[in-house]
Length: 270
Ligand code: SAM
Image 1 (tube, rainbow, N blue to C red):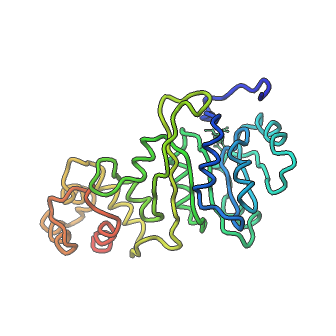
Image 2 (image 1 turned 45 degrees about the vertical axis):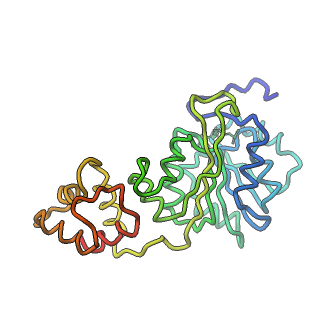
């Protein structure tokens, strides 16, 4: 069906073959007829077609130049789509939004390559592009981690950072058999509602992320000990303990118990 095309492992090419899945991704993405959509890695366009049917305009970014001709043929007759042959991680997303989606809310919706899942998600959130939402298919265990709540095992530095920018939820899981080639693990679709402003206001973002990173750097340590290692700078352990006390936290609290508001409180005092 797709000629002599040879799938490339290095580009994370696991193509969806079950047509019910792209239909459901598009339906549950919250994208409206007024929205612009960026799709990363359209492949043969199975999700692209669904997105074009619900959105005002779709711009796809595909790294594999061999796919561009095949994709253009598949999308023939659809007039609200544009295909760009580029590496998404080297694409100037802010300029793309400005040039392609004037006056539209912009959503990202994609079955993204697994080898750069975190890079893509974090750069979309950290880039502050004013996106309305990000709906992506990722490996199931990554989806669980990205959407885990404080106090649960999967909750870590990445989850806390994500919670600063967006509210994340898992929409549904997708069996490995829905792809060609079949991956080793199941996948899941997650949805981020991106906040217009980060969820908490802090004096200094760098400090917030340094606190989060330090807190989770040694999960087995108490928060007081981890913060002491990273921020000792003239402070005693007692100073750190008293700082945590000012935030209503016990010195023996574990990092995974803290939500983004509590990390922000620490960052503003440390
Ligand atoms: N959307 C298609 C589907 O669902 O069948 C393909 C999904 S496949 C998991 C990932 C796609 O992303 C492939 O088409 C691959 O060539 C493309 N890709 C990989 N790395 C990329 C990058 N850095 N920038 C843009 N596209 C990339």
